[in-house]
Amino acid sequence: MGSKFETRLLGELCHEITVGFVGTMTNEYIENGIPFLRSKNIEEYDVKWDDMKYVSSAFHKKLSKSVLKPGDVAIVRTGKPGTTCVIPNDLREANCSDIVIARVNNELLCPHYLSYFMNAMAHGQVNAHIVGAVQQHFNVSSAKKLEIPLPSRVKQTKIVQVLKTLDDKLKLNRQINQTLEQMAQTLFKSWFVDFDPVVDNALDAGFFEQDLAFSDELLRRVEVRKAVRESDNFKPLSEDIRRLFPNAFEECAEPALGLGGWMPKGWMSKSISDAIFINPKVNLAKDTVAKFVDMKALSTSGYSIEEVSEKPFSGGMKFQNNDILLARITPCLENGKTGIVDFLSENEAGFGSTEFIILRGNKNIHYSYIACLARYESFRQHVIQSMVGSSGRQRVQNGCFNDYKIAVPSGEVMNRFADIVSPSFKKLTQNTNESRSLTKLRDTLLPKLISGELSLSDIKIDIPEETLI
Image 1 (cartoon, rainbow, N blue to C red):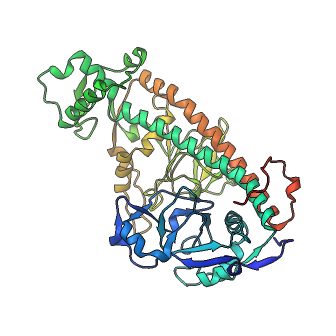
Image 2: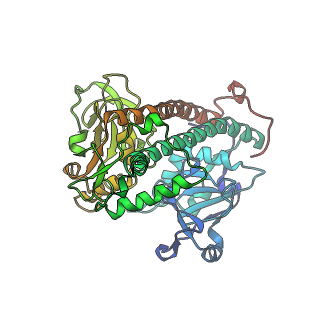
């Protein structure tokens, strides 16, 4: 798409274009310190904190050339060249490696405007300047040659304000979803991993005063709960919920199950493959147009599926609403790719990557329980350890689900868990659907605004008077 605005070279619009540190970093990373961004931490319009690395303050100061400041435009150099975000104001101190850094002349070019242009319209130019046969790079010299459509500085700001109105809502939806996901995960761990309600009931019933060979893990949990119960801000569960849980544990044949081989009395020990459906059969005729999910649409940290398209079915894993999608191939599984199918109508079938594992609940296991289980670290590590295959193409073996046991609660407990977390999952779905619509709107408006095809006067979004961003 062409532009009605004059174009200028990016090098003419920046005070400096440089590159982050290029070299070996393995021995420099520490647990906490100065954030050190790599290509994988730069996504469209935002910094991605998953798998963030950190360096010491001394090392940070030594790499003065690659210091990142708020307002810097960070452009991916290797991996997905051209992917761009602006370093936010709340990231006051950071460093980076293998990232092109553009420091714009703010009187001529709005950094956020540059970010929008790079992500939406610069792919052709970036690809034309990529160098390297095996590992492709986008270099500083290439960045300087990019042709940037340049409306007036005031108009750039107004364009950005329109687009950021949408992006800010997208960011808010992500934050709300993260909070909802964490709440569900916390309750799952309390009820079905740490068995807190059972420990509380057992303490009140004097169960642990018996002369039994309790496991160390169970006794440690008892001490933790005693401390929690004695704290000033302790709030016990309501009586109607507590009475759903047993007041005793029983030893089981699996030492890895429950708390050191002790599980709530009356709960059933089942393997995952016996408790839920793994890759259940779904009817979907060939060439039927259906909703499709690619691997890249799965989140690495939550449950949302970011993008859904439609195309004729020609193969792949089939699924229905409330199914859980779990990546089965490296590195997608290790990176955490998981999602809930929440965009299909009743009895509608969709399909996706052949590298998905489909997990489905039943009348005894609610889908929200499976979603939380799929994010539980012990379960994920068990699945990861089952992977076999050549380097870089390892896949999960379905037999691993026979070997992972869970303590299946009573129907009353499962139903109450579902009652509590279901509103959160419904809100997740609402936010995700809204975000898909907002993303589509933004991606439609963006190139038309930057090209000048669409006038700002045509946009019915209330924005403040021009304030430089």
